Image 1: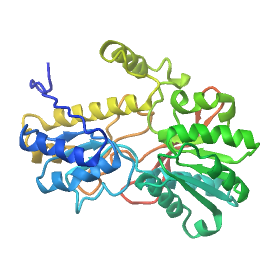
Image 2: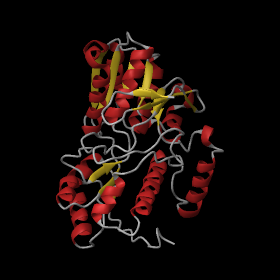
Image 3: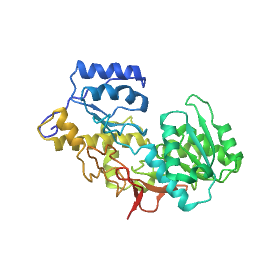
Image 4: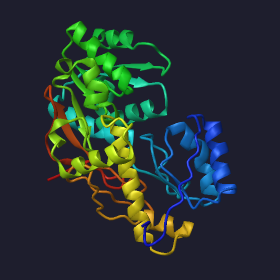
Length: 343
């Protein structure tokens, strides 16, 4: 039945996760297919490759998939809108948690040598403020092409770190959990949201080895048993079985993609019959306390012409060996203001 009585024509082209190809395919969609907007494009470097092009032509670049900072730039990229909390926002949440729970911490950081990894590191330092130089005792980076991060974990332990801030990609977090256990190391282990999936990250490492790990969440993890009877999750699993039976329902990216699509649906509904690029962007930057079914309770989407970060709220959680236990209040960062707890 479409949206507001109009059916959608979805054009999907493969960029092979290669920035030059991303630009080539995007130009084709804009200049030959005359698309109304670009939606949900994945990855930091691919999105960087097309952001200036799309903004110069005033083509909405909506709900892109990256945690890197720099895209929420109303002055230079007013036609670009993300969806995920940036690594900087998330890392500042963890910094506040560390300052509260372990003020004398010695922090070791594992991060990817890329824009996203550096964003997490910058966010941690920003959140720790003047204490960062004393609390962070070691930083270890890795390349995405590395076979293992065992040596980095050994080095961080040797530096005396009692907090491991692990911003690595899922397969490397799995390796890190195993190595930390093998070494008999007992740090406060913090894992970033994108690598917190029970099915994709913790199970391969061994759930018993992941007990006590801390992370933060804004989406419902389909592999977490606490959401097994949640009406929205039950509906989503039925949707996946019918329309995407080959999709991995343990993969949080599937939940993110669904949420992106649901937010886009709301934007198009709100836009009414005026589907001009200007009105679509205006509508996308006018979302107020939007609640999506697959976001955890209390997390709301807000945007404005000066606020291009739809999701800024997260809640801390701790893994108990079976499921993630949410704790504390919803943490929020509003328009550059300090983090605050929302009861």
